Image 1 (cartoon, helix red, strand yellow):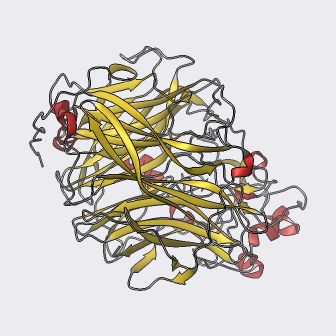
Image 2: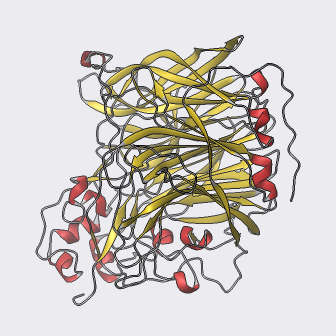
Image 3: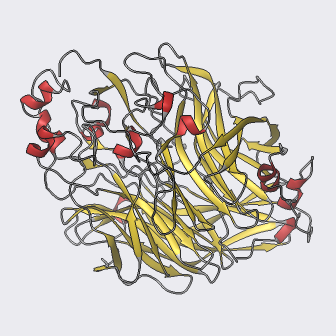
Length: 639
């Protein structure tokens, strides 16, 4: 396919790697919590007021019978990797907390076929690459990993990935076509082929359905770019969208919180800024809506730690601008605060009411990418005041001793047909314009990233969370597993304490489980979902049941993978930066529904085709593109 223009593709990262590829939400009155006790007087960090603006409205609209779910693309443009900017959280000055000989050696759990649940395929790479209508047709980059967002309420599912979203019924019916994130937020298309202009960089979607306001909340990271070159500009924001009703196929309010923090537009002046707020994490309690970001300099190496934003969720639902409290300058133990995961409370659950309303967070404490045996429990108190023009909130923390966890390794996968990998090693890769000569490649291994804290929830009086971790088998070979924690917060006056109610590991003999997403219902019964992958499994989705007094006894296989991951970030000739390790997951999603069941979504491989089929049709019947074949799976189960 000579003569076709090469365009950048994008590999998306989060805290340990932020990828900067070129071109790269009725009116309800909020009821404040009664102030049962004064919030702690001495708050951690530095408080200021963040700048939030209304940026218009979005209308989704339901798919008509004549509207295709995706735009057909039988011959997509070949794309090649461009320069990437690694963003690393600096190590603390301390030595490793736990000797390397203490790598966890948990007992392996048996894998059984799940029963009693339902599920269906979610958004995949073909959907993402072809999302968009009108001026947005054929303007999406090829992206890895998807970064799974999921929220469920009122009979609807909103699912999102990098960089597309779709609304479905809880029965699995598609109510909308895949929608480009930039189109939904009223931004410019990612790229107008063949050579631009380029639109704003968006990434890291998160989604939440709030039972109290009966609204959907969606967030993404946004960075301005130079339209002519695609280079990053000097402004960034966290974009929020909030549905105007409980029907997400209707209108949404749109907002932007300025995260540039260079002293302009009323933002604080932080080192190395203009900055970006990487991987916005969202949560909510009875009164507040919360966003936590990791702040990096756009151009330089500076890392300014977690930036926390707290605001009234009722104001957002009503389309009005809340006062946004911004807290920065945060540390934990001997290092910087990073990836503070805000909690949500399941439908029917009781929000924390201590000290005038409290929102809890969890974060990991492995600064050295080795091993640690602590996590941080955070509490933002006085959240009932967020409905006022001058909120009075206070942040405190407690260091909680835990089981050992640590930096996970890359993951092998089961061998099978991988037509992109095979094409790159022969003349087909040359004919497709992907390489100038046959390349030396191997079946992709998958990236398990790091041991940051994943999704958290406050349920049954406990804070639940989980991390990726290295685990070691009987023969000494290291694999990726999951360490999970159920923490009991308590207070002595205004002093926060945290203790482990239950904890444990997920480990599958000879294989890997990765990117945990945990949810629990109002009764305190939980589900933790993962990708399962290894020499015995194509990438699929599994889950375990757990609670504060019971640990899992088996890993339930909810969705068996169909073939190996075959994406460009695992090919050295296409993405030399990732060194043959394919980007995977970054995070999954899980949420409790009003009926007490748990919905979950994780990355998986839902298709397979041979090289001959790929030669005849590089989309393999509309199931992949030339460059990637990742998919997602959405499941529902009673815990």
